[in-house]
Length: 130
Image 1 (tube, rainbow, N blue to C red):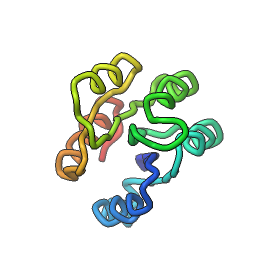
Image 2: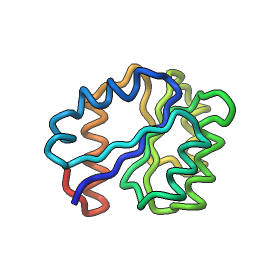
Image 3: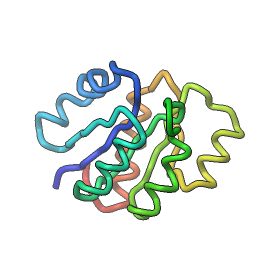
Image 4: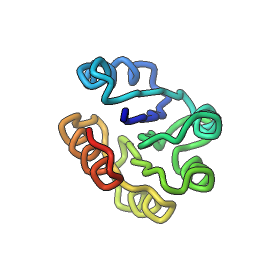
């Protein structure tokens, strides 16, 4: 079974960065990654696509923030873990994300070794193998 991960970030280089770091997993079919460049686009993907295994979302985006998107995602897909990613790792933001249902919290620049560990832990908890 392939792990379907939705990455939500308004920065244009995020997709190529993720594809580069997870290229072996993508080629082997272990991961399927889709990208949304805004919270509204991500909500549409969450509503119309099969259940993602995991959502990675930036917090600070124009229009709707990741924190505003989080409860809407949880309302549609309550069992899908959402890991919030931000350049601002302050305790108040972390607490707010946790209160809204975030399963994890990572700071930018992204440590892809740590992210891989986080993905593996989440997938092990849900019975999916990475």
